[in-house]
Image (cartoon, rainbow, N blue to C red; front, side):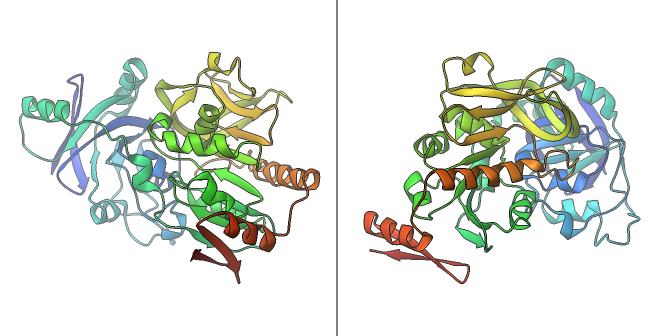
Length: 391
């Protein structure tokens, strides 16, 4: 079956369809990763986007549930040069084609992905429509103009309820703006008692969980589309150690008085060089974002830049001068990607321990009791489970 990809500037690509049939509208972006297409597909940060893989052969090792970064894919379309129908991998449980069919995602192969990538790099990301229909190009352009891009991606991908991953060490509240599973894996393998909360959780609700630290996850879209999150972070700054990743980094910047802006074509792939300004060391990082913190907006805030991108000099890391809080634009959980930056989770836990030693607190159960007295709802923890009680 034929499939077509039409960009808003009128550029048309015609190829072969795989996956589901129908029409899909989204922002057309590209990822430069050589491996890891399954993790790219299942990264919630791609919600609402049509993803182009610059590596030419995709689908050759199939799909394995153990390698997912979320419960399901959220992309709107998948663009590849060559699609392999028959995977060769002893771990593969099914093919890329069957995964896309299962979740109603359209794919297109056989087009010049190099030309498409160069066009996006030159003109910037564009809205596009991926279709298997026989509509005329003029009809598709009208449909494309009439279809706005999504602005509620974070609410679509975030968990709807609180859940826990019990541990014996520091309690970390993970605010899920579209978190990859790798973040939870990195925390739990370090023994953390992790409580995952929805993206619209308030500062008071987080206080009632009596955390030792707060991790702000990655997620899709424009950070200014979730102003309630920046408000929550601003209220908790200085009260608990905070670590932000990707969207969490941008929200941390907004909460601290800085500003964000859209990049021309974003950073997406597993091979982006980032310089640590304190040591001069260069790390190879995994990235997926279309927005960045505006450098000029840092002046007048209590933030300092800790990392920059070696390709375009955009901000890749921030630290608060007064409070125990820092963030990075890239992905230290790195799936797919390098493991250069996994030490940041250890730095976060060390920050928590230093904060606790400098600010002795009540035992956790006493904190929970105090929170219950102060609020209309409370949470207690026993045997790794969370229990909410109405007053």
